[in-house]
Each structure stands twice: as C-alpha cells, then as structure tokens.
Amino acid sequence: MNFQLQTEGGSRLYEQIYEHIKKEINEGKLLSGEKLPSTRFLAEYLQVSRSTVDYAYAQLLGEGYIEARACRGYFVCPVEGMFRLEETAACGNQSCMEAVPSQGALSSRRGRIPEGNVSLGADDAGREAFLQGHGALCGAVSESVHGKRAVIDFSPYDIDMSGFPFNVWRKITKNILSYANSDLFARGEAQGDYELRRTISRYLHSSRGVNCRPEQIIVGAGNDYLLMLLEKILGRHVRIAMENPTYKRSYQIFRSFAYTIVPVDMDGWGMSAEKLVQKDVSVAYVMPSHQFPTGVVMPIGRRMELLKWADKEKGRYLIEDDYDSEFRYHGKPIPALQASDRRGRVIYMGTFSKAIAPAIRISFMVLPDMLLEKYLAECSFYSCTVSRIDQSILNEFIQDGYFERHLNKMRKIYKAKHDMLLECLQPLKGRFALSGENAGLHLVLTSKTGASERRLVQEAAEEGVRVYGLSESMMEEADSATVLLGFGGLTEEEICRGAQALGRAWGP
Image (cartoon, rainbow, N blue to C red; front, side, top):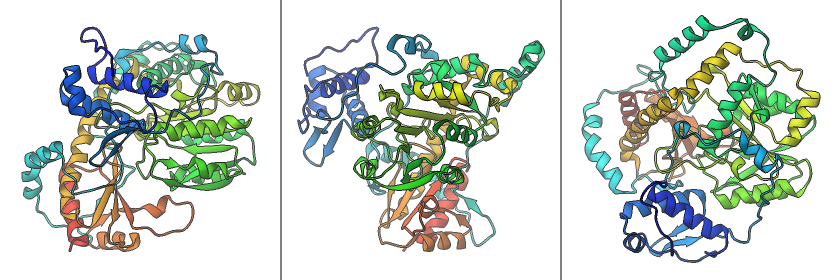
C-alpha cells in the first residue's frame, strides 16, 4: 500500500485510506482473496491512529469490498471479475453533472459499520463503555408493565416528532407567505418547481452520490403517487420482482396494478441476483442501502450483479427505494445504487416524510433519460400533487442548512434510543440474535430456540408490549422466529420499560 496521506487541505484520513483501497480493488491491483495488512500494521506504516484504519476497513466491509475472517484478518472480496459498467452515462457525462455541483453545506457525512447477524452478547469497547455509562438508567426505570395497563408500541414505522423545528418551519412559512407574489399561487410545473428539483439534485449528489439533473426529478405527494405514476410510464402487465420479505405498502400498491409480482427470497446480502436471473421479470424493486424489514445492506458485488442483470436486456429496470438512508450511526453513508448506474437502468425514489415529518408528504423520483422521454411524451399532463407553497418552504429549509442541522440532531436522538434499546435487551442475549443494528429505526430479533413469531408476539402482548412479526412483511403466508422492535417513536424511558417487559415475557 504505497501511497501518501494528505494531512492538509484534503479529505479526512480514514476516507483517503478507504478511497485508495477501493480504487486498488476496482482497478484489479488488489485481487480477490488477497489479504490486507492488519489494522495495527497499516496504522504504524501510515503513522496514523489504529482507529483511523478501523474506520476505513469498516466502511469497506459495509460496502462489501472486503470481508473479515475470524482469527485470520481482512481479505478482498470477489469483485475484479465482475461486470464493469462503462463510464458513458445514458444522460451524457458533462451535462449530467453541470446541474449538481458538490455542496459541502448539504453534505451528510455520517455512516455505518458492518451489519449482519450477531449475538446480543457480542462485546466491543464502545458497547462496554455505553453499558457502564447508562446502566444506572435502566436499573432506575423499574415500573412494571402488566396486561393492558400500559401498552408500549415498538412500531418500526413511527418517528420522533419532539425534535421537529416548529419555530423554523413557522418562520419560513411566514416569510414565504409575506413576500409571495401571484406566481406562487399559479399551477406550476408538472414535475414540481424547478428550484426545488435543483436543490434536491444537489442534495442527492452530495449526500447519496446520486447523479442526476433537475429535469430528471419528479416531485409528488408521497411514494404512493409516484409509484402510480410509474405504472403509467412503465406500462401495464409488467412482471416485477420484489425482495421477500419486503416493504408491504409498496407490495400492496403494485398488487393494485395489473402487475404480476414475483417474490425473490433474500440471502444475507439482499435480493439474490442468481435467483433473479431465473425469473421472467423486467423490473426489480430493491432497497439496497437499508432493506426493510431485515436491515440488510447490499454489498457492492451484489449491486453490480443486479446492474448487470438490468443491462442484459432492453427494457429492464431496477427501482431503488432509498428507505431511511439518512439514519446511520457509525462510519460513512453507503452510496445509493443509482450512483453506480452508468446505463440509465435505475429508477431512484426517496422521501422527506421519514426524515422530517410524515405530514410533509413530499417524495421524489429520479427517472433515467429513456423513461424521462416517455414521461414527457405520455404523462406530463398529470399535475404536480404538492402545493407550491409547501415546495417553497421545503426548498428554503434545505437551502438554508436547516435540513442538515435537523438530520444531525435527529441522528443523535435516534442513536441514543438505539443504544438504549441494545443495552436494555442484554438479558435476552442468550435466547436471541440481533441484526439490522447501527442503522435505521428498528432492530430485528430472531429466536435462537426457534420460538414461533406468533408465540413471541402473544407473550409480549400479555405484558402490555406490542411487537411486530417478520411475517407481516412476507408476500406469502408464513411464520417465522423473528420480530421487529422499532424505537423511533418511543422515549428512552418507554424503551427501557418495554425491554424489561419483554425480558419477563421471553426470559428464562
């Protein structure tokens, strides 16, 4: 690893290490199965702290460029022989980037450490420090939860509205209404106001690596509307593959179309590309950055396999639902799948409802150029479903840096709740395995003893706690040994009381 770190004026040290190793792998200079230097050796060689190298390796692990082998070290994953997409993008290289300059003020440089199935008993220095610092709080919260007396709902869909910047939102609204002219009350553009779309394109490029022009973005009142609009663009009688389990609301919307839905079982890295090849479908719906409900993060190798599948035949597309991608608690954000797309095969979808408030109801869809042409020719007569006043408020909220500050604040709030739930679940470590941690607003618990989901849900209900079975997200009737515990809408006290009640329900 012969390279020099830039200590002044460059990116952070761990990012330089991460970028260099990733480049070496992509260029075939580090081959599949090749062993990387230990973190201790590389830290001494580069004269940096070991934690700096740990951060770089953690990001490479999370994106699937390397793998950790017990007692052996870190090894390069099989990437070099994989499908390589040409750099000639469907949208045109330079024109695609002219409208999306990097905006440091909008950047959300937060991220993750490797995820996967781990035992709740797994130790690490950070976890131990947290347990020592917060153990007293769980011990102090000893109020019992029996029967129906106090229901605690571990909903994976709820968010915390206590941190919403009401005063800022009110101020922006007042200013816009005070200085608004008649144009603001006119019909507006079908795709949404250009200023908002330009702001969204810049934000997506800086925070998620998405490459798009404002012209490719369509703004709508929620993903429901955008998916219905997408049906008009893709056409009727489409065969679509969906991860199983999946986000049930999207499944229900697709079912309302004349679509044939084909379930594709997941493995530990998301939708199986090998199984997808066996299906006669033209569209696949995926959540690569943080799959709901499993919490799986799709590694780079699997992403390239999906892009290869999409590029093999004309008319194939991947719908990327970037579900709660903003909430990661360690490392650096995982780039969007669309960021690796050079052939215009990814339809990217996102929303502000999860990050700001459900009532905002502002979502967006990024269309590849081929589908954009079809939209403009056949569907552009549909009016935008979001008020121009609401669009102006959101535009100013993002442009003036309030959105970035709000996200940073909510990450701290959710991280505290996330860590609190991990701590309070420690008594169950012998009976359950945990996955989906370090990102999102819920954890996934799987019984090691094979206790049925139905039984787990019932036993929790008897203690006044509501949990959610994995089968609710399955496309076919099935039972499992897995439940979801959401923490976004609960206070830390409620989290502790609920976890204590689960300990009584599921403990020895």
